[in-house]
Image 1 (cartoon, rainbow, N blue to C red):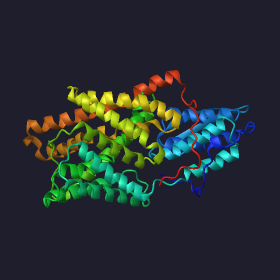
Image 2 (cartoon, helix red, strand yellow):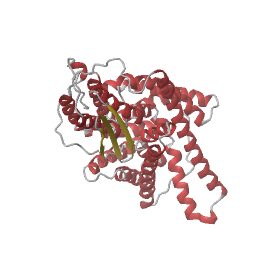
Image 3 (cartoon, rainbow, N blue to C red):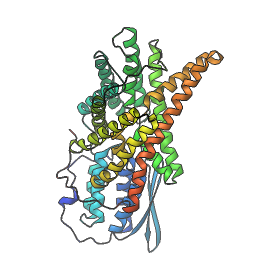
Image 4 (cartoon, rainbow, N blue to C red):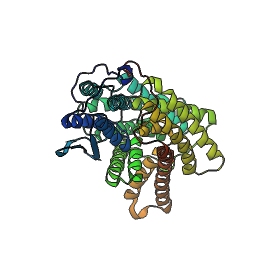
Length: 450
């Protein structure tokens, strides 16, 4: 993400600041503060509804009325004055995910809206939030390795020889992504390169028989790259009739997924390997399934820059959701029916948690259900499509039906997950206005990532 170029410093939490007499600010100050805060929220995966509400609350706290208009690539704020409307825009796109920045920005918004922060204090605090670094490189690499191994367990990895290769592939991919982020702002280069590496290692593992499950060695490091929060935020926007922005978010998530698939298949092709379109599956015990899901959730919390103190919440909720899904599948539910039930539980819990902790709902919820994402089906569909193009008219009916089945299953699971997560949120908002402040959460000193 592009930094505002301000040196990181301690962010003052509104809970620590004594109430001050707030005088109405001028329209330029209101525009500047509203645009600064909403841009931070918008870029780092806060929901559009919450972002718009934050801008309005800031303006009201400073004695004005404002309108926030989000578009892909631009955020516009309009403030009403006695002379008419004044507007200012910021060129930003919602492509990053950083829970810590959202949390700190929401605290500043609360302080402005409640009159506990003066305009100059808030401006400096927002600059400090924008300059916060991501999680440490060590935590990022470890999370990628642990998350990929946990997903391998969920999808049936059996032999211990599989996990070192998965850990090396995912961890090295994380190093590569962090390095590329300093060289290029292109949002597709990092996932493409990490997936390319995963394909190379998975293909070499099969050629030299270094692991017993080449499919999982290649796939699970790619699954930790899937942009779930962007998909979920896009679906929320579509449900709220923000068609253009919702479609843009979904298209961005789809393009990232396409870059991952292209990198994976290219890596396999370079070493003369292919991805089987019908890999074997293995049922695992409930306790193992839930525990592995918990490790995967913890990994994603690190990807999204969540402070350690909050990680146990999505981990426990994610484990409960995975146990519910496992039980539903055992009872005869379809894959998408079981995913809907699990996500309905997560959506109900996380709607309350996100409001109280001031964390972005999409990232918080997705972290808890990451192991349900049908990445395997998406990548198998891509591999099958390549195989279909190579065979042409010689392709069997079985290949075509497998591709269609994988695609339909992936789409239905994604939709079931999205609506399962969104429905409780929509119901909760009927009883609690969007942007209303929850009970105070005392964060103390600024949260460090490491």
